[in-house]
Length: 254
Image 1 (cartoon, rainbow, N blue to C red):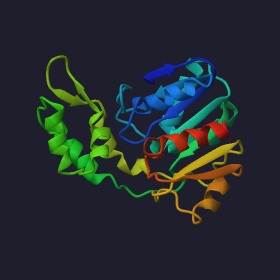
Image 2: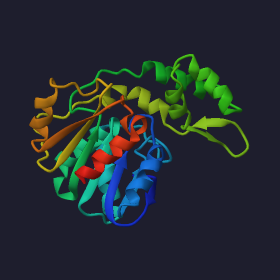
Image 3: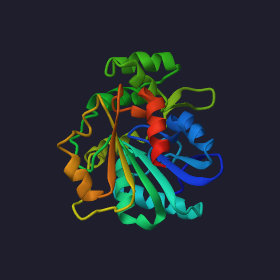
Image 4: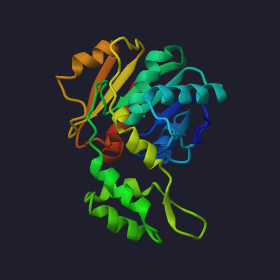
């Protein structure tokens, strides 16, 4: 699958994978910052997200093969790979499957364990948007606010809207497949999957996606060289909620 991407700067390859219902564009500000440090930053849309192709199939195994194809197409070597949330799940499995393609691995606020589906309200709100004719973003915001009262989360989700010429707004994300495959989103890493390269796990202080110290042994079972850093004053969207400390932690690591 030919993935959509936005490439910033020149230098050592640095790929960033967004989370569930996100897109590479969510990382544009940080991507530009990393590109100014002599990195060639690839903001990739994973399948069924952003401007990448839609498919009836969705699993981390497929996302890993999509990424391998992307790396081969762009002739990248010794990649720094960062994944947030769902993108972190892709990155973990990719590292364990193709360790020779990576230089360093960064996993943002997700662990290699199974997570039960927990996006029901968000998916219900997006389904409503898909079922009506939307003439404005204000209209979409009003509809989704009934399911997602948090304004920053609303804005994040509404980035999935795209206008068809001068017509109505439509969702770019492949909602049908993602709803059907929702169990796959929380899949854990199989016990035999191990990556022995340099790895940084970043946890948001206010987030419970990574629980310390409970998850620490599991992280090291799969990633024996892992370091864990907690970013203060941040929840699951660590990179947006405390961008300065997040950026500093990444730069120290790479």
